[in-house]
Image (tube, rainbow, N blue to C red; front, side):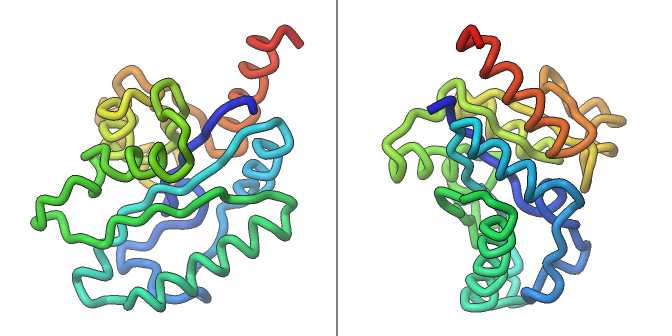
Length: 185
């Protein structure tokens, strides 16, 4: 295995919405994102999603609605030739003070426990400061994409030490190239 790549969902894989993605029909992939996941898989990376979904706590969608959205996402990834090893969700509101809501590293720790793989040194690709903070807190390597809220995050100085790419497709290509270089191939 080349490694582990953890992805935020909204703004990285699919278009974000200020009113929350509430149904499968509202879930629209960002061009090139599904193919990027497939390329990562073909290069030996396990790919998972770590997503805050406070719309559940706010009563904007149910757990069944979210499951249907994720079923659509997984099907779209499969149709593009890829696979998600897991989808890890924080359903809590920001004021709940949970350990799983990014910027806390709880979702990343869940990935490590469920997959039996360390997240230390793994890649985490997100579009917001809270994604990057969660990556750093778990010892993962932060990557910022300019899709979703990423351009604003970068412009505000929120990228910090994160590597920055235009989108998931560009980030995937760079991670695959790094993996090949480190493998000597």
